[in-house]
Amino acid sequence: MNQMHQISSNPRADGAPATRALRIGMVGAGWMGRAHTMAFRTASSIFRGSYDFPELVAIADASEEIAAAAAKELGYRKAYGDWRALIGDSEINLIAITTPNYLHAEIAEAAAKAGKHVYCEKPLATSPDAAKSAWQAAQRSQVVNLVGYNNIKHPAQAYAKELIDSGEIGEIVRFSGTFDQDVLLDPDAAFTWRHDRSIAGPGALGDLGTHLISLAQKLVGDFASVSAITRTVVKQRPDPRIPGEMRSVENDDVALFNAIFANGAIGSLGTSRMAAGRKHALKYEIQGTKGAIAYDQEQMNEIKVFRTIGKSRDRGFAVVPVGPDHKGYSAFYPNAGVGIGYADLKTIEVDELFRAVATGSPVEADFEFGYKIDCVVDAVLRSASQKQWINL
Image (tube, rainbow, N blue to C red):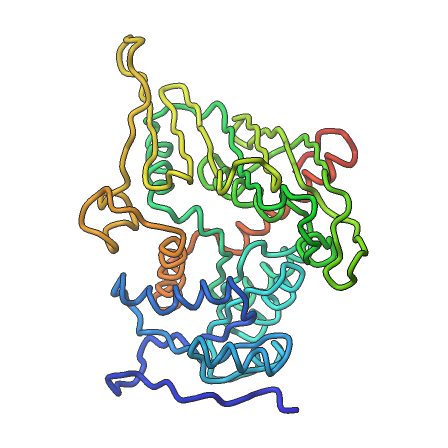
């Protein structure tokens, strides 16, 4: 069977040649691949940036049939049953990766070695060594590289970073945060690839906790050491392939750890995929010597700020609605109070990626950033196993 299946042509509507071409190959046709594709289509319309409307050249998945169906539905011109063939397609200059976690680093490294720009969904890898190898390949090839930690792209986080960098809340003393969901609270929920350590890597820590770690790394800085505990609460789940059979869960349902940051701040971070009542509870508080910042993504269009001005005991946190004065927001709406959502965070992320490819501008959450997060995850797992502090 051929590894490529032609779908349809997709020329520029105005017939003009591409001068700042973005020719995309997508690996992975699942939910996240759809989210990326939506952002590809939206970014140039929302931001009207320094790049042409992207060409959706090809998509690859586990079989040619799956890829061909996705290509037809999502608007890609070609379909491949092998990601290696997609990387070898000379039309493509940007590879997007939305596969299960264990494939991320291998595909990212191969794409970088082929001279393609790389947009990899998080995590970059399931081990620090694999992440480092992908990062080094991207460095050697000098290609744009970005890991999809989209939660750090929210305009509220840009505002928080400005407050911290300006010294407005003083020296950072403590970061505390959680990312909790109740998606696996039901013990009868079936075993999926996310419970298989060889495919997913860690459980709640890798799936949810890495988003929290990304916010801490962006806002506070690099981690220096961690002390952790993890727990698998539901140790077996129904095997969907074999009625009546159970499969052992191979990774964590809950993870908690304390941290010391390189700048001396301390932290406490936790995550659970069995947190009753919590739907998307990604939240943090950053305490400084002159003020504090608090954020909860279940109220994602506001951020709370406290400044120690004066001596009044009646003064508390001020709620700041996210608006056009905050980086990334004004492209969507001209006034505050109109909420942006998850898909918009992906659009902001993709705009940064596209501008980097077209103009050479810097990106945040590159492969080095992703490698550092994978190092933190590895240290947390080792700490939990060894029951001791682990230095990064």
